[in-house]
Length: 179
Image 1 (cartoon, rainbow, N blue to C red):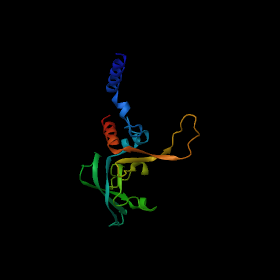
Image 2: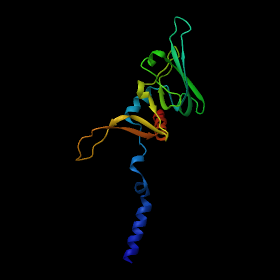
Image 3: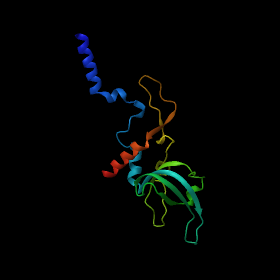
Image 4: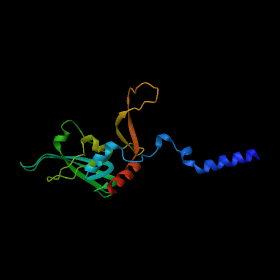
């Protein structure tokens, strides 16, 4: 009789709290947008994820114009200002490319772009803060962060890149847009 009661309590406990026992701590979805992305998202006129399909430099056609580069994406997930499943192109000032290529054809990114200027130019909000790589598994790679130390262990010696599922970040970005 005593074993039967214990079994019943064990099964009842497992049924009442299945999520904590089944969840993997490394894949827990964020409960809110990471703090460093909140100001970037608020300042962005356009937010989407996609794959770079072409990069086209353009010389100015008149003396009062500036040299630009047109970057075209195949949009996978539209979050603000672009239609999903379409291509989206934006123009950047060519001077931003003086240090080298900023994009590669085939590269997957989560983009936070300023609203276009009067000249129709834009760029990622906060530079690299508004241009986040998306890996092959759909994880957004956030800037490297100091590795957290465990209680009683020596201080961290390296940094690790935080990776968060794009679908979770997209949900949080939509929620932020509703506030």
